[in-house]
Image 1 (cartoon, rainbow, N blue to C red):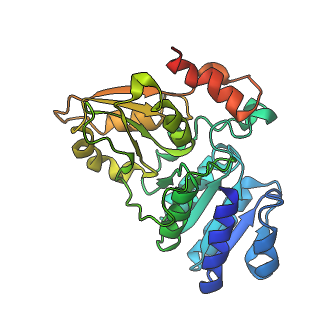
Image 2 (image 1 turned 30 degrees about the horizontal axis):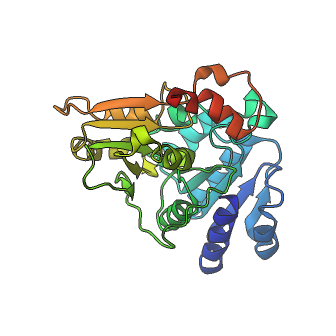
Amino acid sequence: MRKIFIDELILAAKKNKKIILIVNDLGYNVVEKFAQLFPERFYNAGVAEQNMMGLAAGMALEGYHVFVYSIGNFPTFRCAEQVRNDIDYHNLSVTIVNVGAGVSYGNLGYTHHSIQDYGLMRLFPNMLIASPGDVTETRACMRHIIKRSQPSYLRLAKSKNLILDKENINLKPGKWRAIVNKKNSIKKTFLTTGNTLSLAKELILRKEYKDYSLFSLPFWGTKFKSMQANQIKRWKEIIVLEDHIEDGGFASWIKESLNNTSVKTKIISKHIDKKVIGKVGSERYLLDNFCLKFFAK
């Protein structure tokens, strides 16, 4: 996903001289090509995330579309006040890129677990959340974001997740994308956002889920809650799978979208167990033991 991000950013930067990339002394083996091609539009802000966001906001006020690239909690929790006050409240064209979604960097310890970021970022009213689940969605998310001027949060997994069913797709914020749509199913489906798409594809191969469809929602946020009820009501049961803890997560957002509606769909949340806090291991190990365990036979 990181490679797709930088490839798409380079393609856009060749056409648009207003695209800027800022890092905080990381991103090596990913960002160098951009830095070499556009040295005047690449900045290393150092290990100073709050300053980095202030710099991004200032450039955006001058008409630039700024991409801020960092790992997990560094561009979110560490500089939450700057994201809120400087970027979101001013509705600036800054894309915050988190390349450590979920437990992508689980081997570096729980300080690098990005499992509460949805809860923070979806609080900001102007923020578009882009959480692609594969290479195809990553490319589509980038192309959508580049064309629009608004605060956005691009949440990328470290892994590749190559699910190349289509080379080019159009994604509409708030609208579910059909991955496996079983027309004759018993009206049960999985719904994912982000890195758990590949896990859901594994699960629907199991006998107990053979009648389930699978949908993905890469683009969501506060503005798109009103679109959910009509999509939810066609199903009797939805299993929401995410690499985030339950509180403040994607499933919580889905359930909130049904407030003051008459929709009776059963929504089941499958998420990362908060017991993962304090644990260290590979991404797959942590997901198997603190997320997929909910599906143990």
